[in-house]
Every structure is written in structure tokens, then in C-alpha cells.
Length: 188
Length: 117
Image (cartoon, rainbow over all chains, first blue to last red; front, side, top):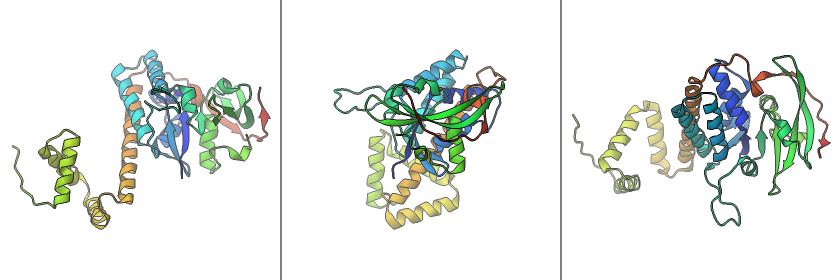
């Protein structure tokens, strides 16, 4: 049986590192990245999907935060390794597109076309025409603001449907044993 | 001081060892040294289990390969964990949480679909 392919957006990876830098442990991003890297999220076998462009962007953001270049390279290499060692053994560097003459580097949208679930804190990026959404959890910011999260079904340019969801919702579902593809919300 | 060892091994094992040495551009001696290094570092129970599996079904046993892939995945996960800690150690700490880690679950939602666009 194929694993659920999960694309972790760069903001989730960066948040993970910033929380580590601040000495926080057991945060949402830390639990999520750790579980996805292990290949198992709750009861579901999962494969991390990342494009090399996303991993490069992750490194650039860390450098802007003042990270040591050698350590950024180690994190870059370790991420590539996790993608390759996952249950599906994907390669973040290269993917041959159907009908393409050459080998294409993947950006986030291309990577999403290979994913079942895209996990991001920036849900508004994906509130695009033709997408469908369902409200999920209510969350509260540390500064007191609150907002309603949603999950969204979007269609990539290649026609592939991918579910976009917030890290908190994905983690909660894994803990509650709910479907990580959100099929119980009956999005198209 | 390096020592020379002599051992008698079956033909298929000798052939496999030579193939690995050739494919990985290493000397036969280096492959044997690595193999002994890894084997003697494993706990006895694990050594016994691996030997029994290979004896029963050979090195191409699907369960053996599945376990090998799982081990590679665990090692990759640990390497990532260490690498993220390593890079975090070079960044100035910000006491205010960011991104997804700045939000806490408040209450459950009622799942009702709506359509965008």
C-alpha cells in the first residue's frame, strides 16, 4: 500500500529550527517534522515530499537568521537524506516529467503535484479560485488573537488534487486517529 | 598495528564482496575491514538474528531488505534531528514563538465544506 505523501512547507521547517534555537521542545512543528521524518504519522505510513528548490529556500531563510553556513549545509543534506530514505524512496533533486525532454528541478508547486497533503502555516497562499475549503479547528495565538483554521482542496496545474492543511490540524488528526487525507470532510 | 587475517568463505560471498569493492571503488581489504567493524559493533542478539535470517533466506530476503530500509530511515531521521539542533545552535534565540508554534488549539470545529473562488 502506498504511503501518504506529505509536503512540509518551508515555514514549518523554519519554525522547527527557530523553536529549537529558543530551547522550546515538543512544539507542533517539532512533533510533525520528527514524525514525518520517521515515516510514520500516527497509524499512517508517510513519505516526506520536498523539492530541492524548497530545501534551498529553507537554507536561505536560515542564513538570513544568522545560521552558520556549514550547519545549514548539514541540515540541507540531512533533509535530502530523509526524503530518499522514506518508504517511497523519492529523490528531491530530480524528477522526469511526463513528456519533458529534460530533467526538471522542482519548485513548491511541482512538488505539490506529487503530494497528497501539503502542510503549511500560510493557508491564505492557497485560497485560490477553484479550490474548496472546510473549517477545522479554532486556534489561539500566544498574543491572544484567535482564528479558525481550514483545510483546502486545490488543483495543481497538472490537474492533481492536493489537500492543504495547517500543522496543528494534521498533528491533531494523527493523535486522534482521524484520516490524514481529510476525506471525512468530503472535499472534492 | 594492522594485522592480516585469513578466512575461508563460500564462493558466492567472495563474489559479492568483490562486486561491492568494485562498485564502491574500494579495496577488498577495506570492504572486509568495514564489514568486521560493523559486525563486531552490533549486539550479540542482533548479530544472531541477522545471521539466522540470511542463513534461512539469503541476502535477498524481502524481510531482511525491509528491515534494512527501516534502519536507514531511522538513521536518516536521527541525522536530521542532530542537524536541525546543530543549525539551531548557531541562531540567536527569539523568545517569542513563530509560525505554527505560536498557535494553540482552542476548540474543535464543525466541518462544513465551502467553495473558494
